[in-house]
Image (cartoon, rainbow over the protein chains, first blue to last red):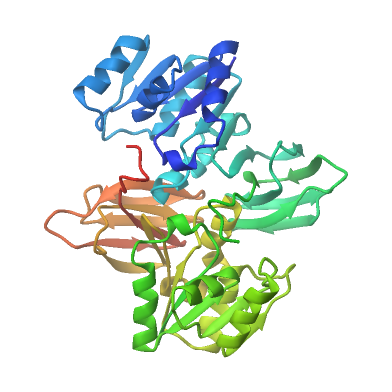
Length: 228
Length: 228
């Protein structure tokens, strides 16, 4: 079973097919998690929410009542909690429901300290085992994470570019079979190699590293959002 | 002399007073830098651009002609260049024009590999001397960077929240005089402590660290963008 979660970052950054992706999850029996207002927004789109969690602080009494009426598994978290919304979703999906993968929407944009929390959470020791099973998706980006080892990264449909961002100290990072390759790169500091591309004849590139966690960000231009 | 640069990230993420800030820079004789299409967008708003730089690849012939007619200092960069747009702006501002501060707009959102490049660039040894003289601003966020030492961080007008994100290995990070304080925090990995707040009676908090580079992100909710 896979899982799909909606957090509270700006609606304007949702991918165009967000509703279809959640409806498909309903059809295929995958787990749908709504965090805070995300639970309500999903229901308003006619999507069945399997788990709702959050402090629900921003919801009106009648809005919370809608969630409480329709969602079987509701988890009330402490507003001054130890876990962020995305971390709650991870814990629920992997620890309680034993899913194989978690796709998170609504984790980017808006307040950027939140986005950075969502980006850096895979570095925490307790979540590191799930690093390669998490995808963050918004209107223009799909972010996947890779631990030490050799990986074949596949081009995702509809994305023109990719960037490789190291999130902590990396040793011996290699990119092969892409427009711009990289050999034996090591750095104590995070760095983002942006605007790379898959080769026209290939739908994959090879990524490897001997130490560190790396994010691969596949992205696309969107005319209504992008100036250049 | 201060400086203000416009990069190419989504217009929708500009702060509401972007035009006023650049017009003020014109009036006070501060340096205005347009990078790529940013140069054109500034001119379309009636702002005098002092320096235009970029590969101008995305511009039409007549659009580039407008820039070439009106801007005294134009720098053509290589499309497959060693420096990102933001790094070009930093080099121009600090190395060539010896400005005291650089505020960058259009550096967040859109393709997130670009945003991460813009966030992590202050970690590069050649830019580290400018770390504390750079501010990134968008619709909801103002990001400043701090090196080792003790800092008094001031509340900026209009922002409710702040987050503290460590960008590399930190030792002995302290937050004092805020809603949520932090004592002697050390981590090899980046982490973002989000949703902190200034105390009601105070317009500052103390930040110190013995090793590492830290971003302080002041942020606000915007109804038309934020779900929660």
